[in-house]
Image (cartoon, rainbow, N blue to C red; front, side):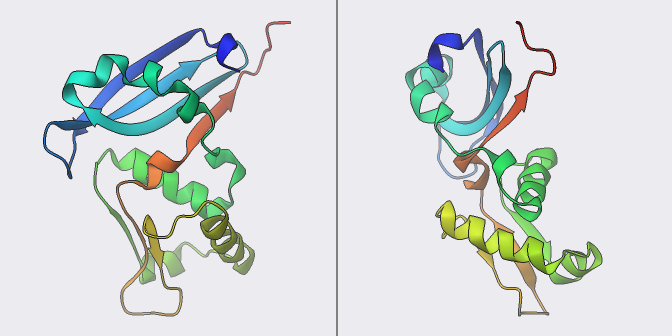
Length: 153
């Protein structure tokens, strides 16, 4: 997989909310077959070399594309917000979005399979607060893979 890498680009998103002199970054890896996006954080002085030094660790992260609809929704929501912090999913909004029982069950299964304890908190029985809270490290546990529509062969 690594031999097919055509380019690696690192984009600084913002200063880290948690560690001084650290920045949150987006890493884009292109091959002839797919484009992979990953999110991480590193020291400000290490941005240029971070992706190459950690490439093997990045490409083996689980793909968010392989999770259920709710986990995918949360990932995309956090990414689209452009913030480096937490995402709160209030109960009333969760209910308005009409998630089905199979989506909730798949979310619980994904939560356990990908060891997201401490990265996501959820309580589907508390009707007064936030149903799901995603911490800043949530998106750093996955990669988003988009396969090329036209393959080079």
